[in-house]
Image (cartoon, rainbow, N blue to C red; front, side, top):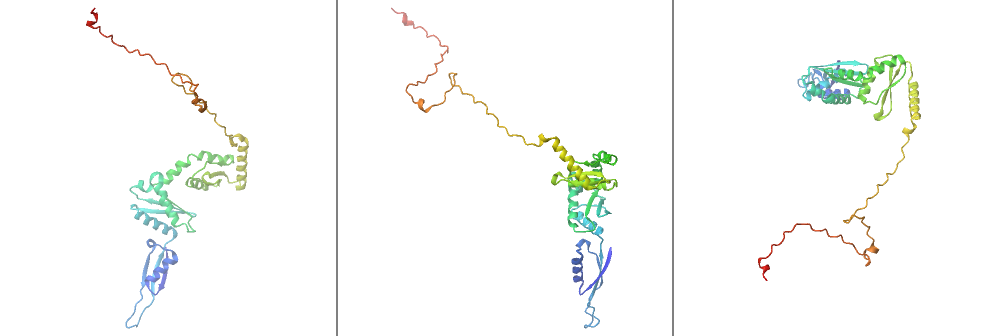
Length: 294
């Protein structure tokens, strides 16, 4: 930490001015009052100047202190936070967490949210461009599992000297590939595409970017020429109508469509369906006893 001495009329005014000049938060403010203003005795031996010594933290310390304050407000108990800087990238590791599942969240969602908030707070810092937050080695295990799918194809580029275009990925997954390739001096990466179709091209460091772009665009054109029929829109065909079935009446014949001219014609007589015989069994009437009289 850097030590800075400030003087002024009052202690409050000195602290307020120092916070405004250096954009210091409350959790980062550390100072020591060296001299307070005094009125003296009857105006004699008066001291009208105050002196305050401030401890200005480095950028790494400011980010670490902010992370400690943020986790404390979230109710997360932890031991220590270690920081490691590589270029303009800062890696923060939180140790001593009892319930790691809460800070990691489902598929790392909570850890990603906290990391995003920290990056937004310090996005104006020119010395540190990217901040990564990890705990219990979660990110390292996830990165190793993700890279295992691409390492065999990436290693072939070193010997063949060809280019490798990977499938579209999310921004976080692309950063994992970029960081891994940065450690290898024999390979380079390039991002092509827009939106959700952004892809990473891995190529040998002996090639230049414009050569890779030219080769990639030529390969894309060859694919479109090889499959012209797939790119053409298919013509729209009208679906033939199914023939309508004629409804049958009670006689079993086809029902004729109603014609307003012949419907009220007197010559046309509607045929009624024949009555079906009644085969219901009827008991014979008993003969009368008096019926045999002569």
